[in-house]
Amino acid sequence: MGNVYLDGIFVGRTEKTKELRDKLVERRRNGEINTQVNISYAEDKDELRVLTDSNRVRRPLVIVEDGESLLNEKHVEKINKKEITIQDLVDEGIIEYLDAEEEENALVAMNEEKVTKEHTHMELDPATTHGLSASTVVFANYNRGDRVNYGAKMIGQGLGLPSLNFHTRFDTQSNILTYPQHPIVETRTFKEILGNHPVGQNLVIAISSFEGYNIEDAVIFNKSSIERGVKRSHHFRTYSTESRRYWGGQKDSIKIPDKDTRGFKSEDAYKKLDPDGLVNPETEVEEGDVLVGKTSPPKFLGSSEEVKMGLAAERETSKTVRHGESGIVDKVMITEGEDGNKLIKTKIRSERIPQLGDKFATRHGQKGVIGLIVPEENMPFTGEGITPDIILSTHAIPSRMTVSQLIEIIGGKAAALRGEKVDGTVFHNEKEDELRETLKEKGFRYDGKEEMYDGITGEKRDAEIFIGPGFYLKLSHMVEDKIHARARGPVTLLTKQPTAGRAREGGLRLGEMEKDVLVGHGSALLLKERFGSDSTISYVCDRCGEVGVYDRQEDKKYCPNCNSSEVSDIEVPQAFLLMLNELKSMMIDPKIEMEEQ
Image (tube, one colour):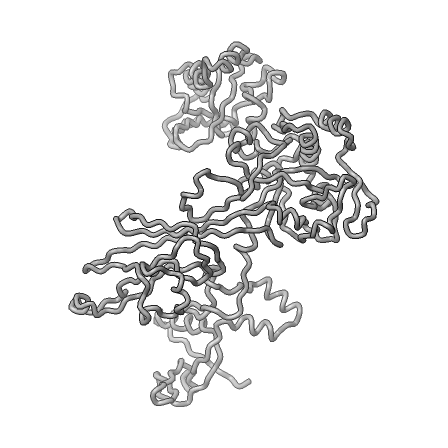
């Protein structure tokens, strides 16, 4: 007896589990059951699982019966003439959508030539085995599967033109490539999906070593290429603040705060504000500068009479530029929030010029940061005087086996020479031999290599260098967003330890493994210093071991437990004192025993 489940809920048992599954599938194909229902049979458990719930990933497949595909040439002709759609074929029971569960019961042929009597389904097209991102990888069928996955992930992180109305949008954070280009080697999917939203640039790539600065996946950039605009981008960040209303008729005020309200902020922080408390567009701002001046009612109000008379002091709650960021005010928008409160959004724009540490990648998962920016006169050049925009390490290719990247560069060279794009769609791409033949016809070596000369000495290099145009992506991981260092700075109120995170000027965590490194070096004093970030002086009673008190007014130390004045100063972490207090809150009275050292 096999169990039957509907959306994971047990609904009954049957002796003919497989036969029931076949009948349900047949009814679905006949239109008696909704086409979005999926029925799968788990043979190992003799279970029938019927799924109708939402958010299942389903994909279309052609139904195969008795070794014959139900999709024939007449159907294809009608689709090409737009007389019918795929949905019509689904309704006719020629195509059906399978989810991940039902796919386990299917044997899918890649194309009509490979269909046998064992097959249950056939792909609409071999390229549909790739998802949206993966199908933008050119010549993907020459790559290892994991590299196609990495490449798909890189395309998702690549900067480009995500929206055509980015000037009027107020996204929290966005990056726009200044000069995006269409790839000269592209796939049909890329053309259809990203046609108006290109995500990279065509660069001349040389695969070579250069002074050792492109080891460990680093890449070397041509300084003149950057100066001409290669991989420049703009970063936009939106700062929002709301003028809220509170009980008792209190509300926030948008204005330049009075001097006695400003707290720790200097007068310079407010100098870029207009009299209305807002900053003007196209104003240069830096970290700590106030963008919107705002004051709020006090958190803890006194008597209601005090509030009515306006005697309660205001709090300074202005919106300032985040730590480590700067730029130019792009737009200021005043609107209403969900609750009808005044909402002010300020968008900051900053230009990002490629620098050491910025991350780049190809569509084949070859990612790396800039290791060196070289003046053009020092870069290697070909006999025709072409210098590469980017030099990729030779060691990046053999272990990862991204053969498709090499074919892309050959295809890019062929496309540039003949003046038309190369189709790199998976399983439908132009043949490698044809691309090599084009290179030969145009007077280049068929293998894509060229003799190159050293830019510093002018001597011809011993080995030929593989060089040609390829598509490169600038990723959103930029060193300007990540670089962080700190000596002294803000600490948390409770533990007196440094705050966490770059945005809060936080400390850098020294963990177990970092500690082991210092122990291995024998750096005892450095270890002591690093682990004393919350070091504090405490007073301990010599008699009873309780934590003592220091009375500032009378300038004396004493023990509140036994009233003894025999109190010693000890250096302990603030977190230790916090632990003692937490133990006391649990009715445990800890004693500290001291000994002379």
